Amino acid sequence: MLVTPARTPTLKAQAYTQAKRTFRLSRTSQRRSTANVVMAQSTTQELRAGDVGEQGGEAFFPTAPSETTATGAELPTEPPMRIGHGWDIHRLASREEAGQGCVIGGVSFDDTGFELGTVAHSDGDVLYHSLTDAILGALGLPDIGQLFPDNDPRWRGADSEAFMAEAVRLMKLRGYRIMNVDVTLILQKPRVSALKAAMKENVVRICDTVPARVNIKARTHEKVDSIGEGRAMSCHVVCMLENTK
Ligand SMILES: [Zn+2]
Image 1 (cartoon, protein in one colour):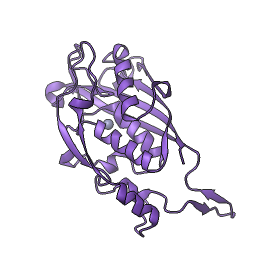
Image 2 (tube, helix red, strand yellow):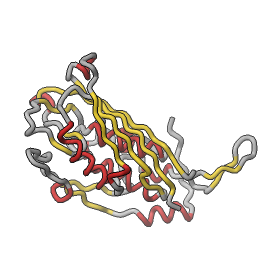
Image 3 (cartoon, rainbow, N blue to C red):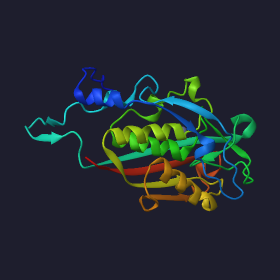
Image 4 (cartoon, protein in one colour):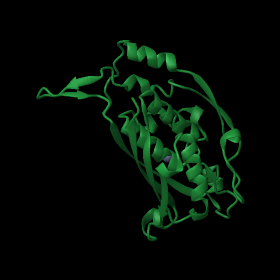
């Protein structure tokens, strides 16, 4: 349930406002390429930080350093650690129906022999979406669908790196950094084992962390249900954040 964000300006909120900035994400300059992998088509997109969707995440930041429980205990609103979980699923279809190819963890599978595309408003990156939701969830913020509505033409075919980068920006504004990230891709196809290293490199870069704090694993769905029949793919992410203040 959404809580109406506090609009009363505070010193903290003013600091957040001052920290807002415009940044440009260029997937061509930031994405790494690996042998036999062609990255998703080059697009440049502007995201005005702090003004995502209609519910800028900063509006949901705690406005007091501590709060009192019903029994009188004083608890800090920003604990030393926070944990978040993200989950996502996308349907796979012919590239003609999907209108695009398949991108997972910022890595395109278009030239790997995988013939299907991901059905989504954005590029449908199931790993980036679940990781974005894990970070937003750890921070107690609205989810990816609320911050980046799928009826907003800005996000049609969007590079999902923009969503993850915004979650990381909000995480840093709150004084947190990645403690560790554990990703579980669940998909029958495409086969991802050869490209997990490239996905990890992308996650490490966007999360501004180190490889030892990121784990990406993948498994099948034992050929059962839509995922097992190759008609969809999904991903779970658990991430832990540590307070740096
Ligand atoms: Zn998604």
